[in-house]
Image (cartoon, rainbow over all chains, first blue to last red; front, side, top):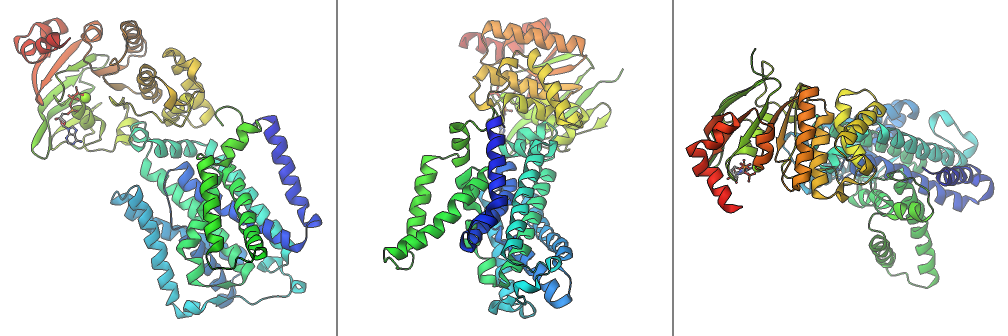
Length: 326
Length: 243
Ligand SMILES: Nc1ncnc2c1ncn2[C@@H]1O[C@H](COP(=O)(O)OP(=O)(O)OP(=O)(O)O)[C@@H](O)[C@H]1O
Ligand SMILES: [Mg+2]
């Protein structure tokens, strides 16, 4: 990164830290959604952007993480700070099964993506029918008033959840940057670019793909635990839904797949855009169902057509934020 | 002294076609062993059997006294056999330096050491001034050099070069010959090369092995092989006519 890049990053970080003191609760909740979107986008980006594996079923890990954390808390009294490890373990177990099937039987490219969808769908149907976890009617966490805030049980007010989201997004950025520069990160890039050439250079493609799958799914499960405790309710039809998986990957795609800052930039564009559209369309009296999706889709197409490699590479070039080869 | 690389009775069939048909050869440490033959003779397939892309249907490959046939490409590379691809396979979106550093990191703990080693190799192959360029933007001759650089970066004991001279101009060929001769002599690197450019073969090879329709038709010193009646008829003769 250039000096300008570091300055921009520091300013953005300072603004995000200061935001709760400046903005109202509505804006803060939007910033929170941006941060969570940035976090989840980064998790997905490790798998797709770094390692070249297109998952269209990341809702699987999100839902497994959310349900594991919530069930452990409500049914077994295990707090989320402990439960999050169980959530990661469950997600990694699911990812192992998927990876084993995919890599063992050479299910590659678009077929691998289909496999990820299939896994998420199976989980959705399973949780729909699992009465212990509430089935299709949903699973609920006890809502605590803000006065009873217990940070150790992830019970807290908007400020608490905001800073937690900020920590998650910042942590994911640091982890992504670290991994990207590591040997493992370079092995991922090699496998993404050309698996046969990577293997000829001694890279164990299967092993590094598993690592990418593990890290990405575990991170996503952490996001799931967060969402469970933040929203206090879980429905299989929402958390495991295909649309959830798509939502999760739009930010990194729009921002720039494989870049460090793309998922963050994408989330900070798309979340407010979606919110603003609701308001604008309402003000215009356009309440037809699907109107938002239509306009949103059209805007996405324009953005992606204008910057096919993502917004971030374009921004970084215009503002001279990154050095050559970054 | 036993051979560094031995292939015994290798057979590889693709459905009806026998691409490699009972091929045996052995390469001594420090040799430059050339494999020549017309298009479709099975040369690249033979490399793929040695490098672990395919397991042979019959026969075995030993390297430094151990069986390697049927092993994974990454394990064969770790054992000390590097290869280049005839149809070049750069990592197009990565810098030239990163391309080579990925090869170098096989034998280093830290990326910084891998980069330093990659830097040295890029200098050797005249690619140093293009190090921060994306590999996808290189010209074909430079991509061929990158193939060699990346394979060398894994610090192999044996390198399999698949037509690395193809597409090079005569001066570039001579330069590549000089580089290969240097790494063969000073680093004691054993080279097995598939090559159509006879000028390079004659300059470098200690022995030449000729394939035709998957089968071995001759092997020996370069001078002897190029005078061999069979070889002239099935390969060099047609080649002379074609050029
Ligand atoms: N993966 C494959 N599947 C099916 N057939 C193949 C495969 N690879 C090679 N062949 C066939 O095997 C034969 C030998 O091909 P190979 O590439 O080994 O020849 P070559 O000697 O390297 O030729 P060239 O000089 O053109 O590179 C050819 O008929 C080719 O079509
Ligand atoms: Mg060939």
